[in-house]
Image (cartoon, rainbow, N blue to C red; front, side, top):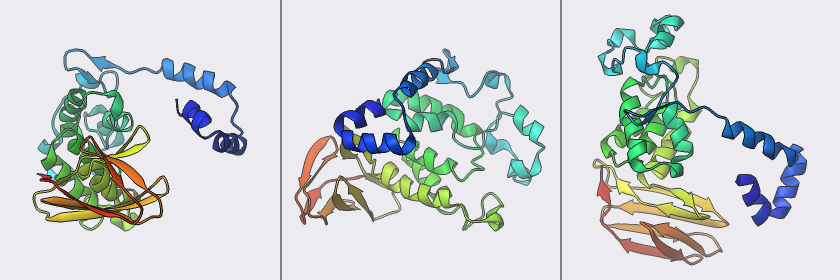
Length: 262
C-alpha cells in the first residue's frame, strides 16, 4: 500500500527512492506473500492476540506482585526463569497494535491493553511511551499520565538501575510522543494532521510544534481554549475533534474548547 501510494502521488520521489535503495517491483510479490502467511495466534475466549504459543499456559501472576528486591528482573533472575515466566519486558502485542491501530476497533485495543499491561515489567526504554499513547487512545487517562511520568523520569530516577550505562534517548523521544501523539492525539489520516487533545489533571497547559507539508504549526493547549499559530508561509488544514480547521499562513487562531482532563 505504501509503495502504491508513493508511486501514484509522488512518482519522481518514488523513482529517486527506488534507485537509491535498488528496489525492484518483483520484491512486492515477495513481501505480499510474507505478509499473507504471517502467524497471529488469537484467543477466541478472551478475544486477544496471544503473545506466543503457550503463553496462556504460564502462571499469569501480575508484575505488581513481584518483590521490589526482584526488580528489575533482568538483573536478578536467570534468563531461563524469565523465559518461563509470564513477564513481558516491553510492549510486544501492544507495539504491533500501536503501529497498525487504524486496523483495530477501540474495544480490541482496550482488551489487549487491559490483559497484557499487568504482566509487563517495563524494563525497556521503549515501553512506557507506547503504553501511554495507547492508554490515551482508549481513554484511560490516568494510565496515560502515569506512563508519561515513567518515560520522562526513566533516567532521572534510574527506574531500571542502568542509567550508569548511558542515557536512554528512546525514552526522551518517547516522552515527546506521549504528549503529542498521546495527550494531543495527533495522527495522520487521509494526508491530514488529526488532533483530539486532553490535558492531564495536574497541568494547566502544554504546547508543541509540528512541521507538516511545508507548514510549521505551534499548538498551545489550555483548559478553556486552544491557540494554533501557523508560523510558515504556507496555508494549512488540520482536523480538530473531527472537524476541518484551516489556518492561513502567519495566522494565529483561538478556539474556545473545554479540553478533557486526565
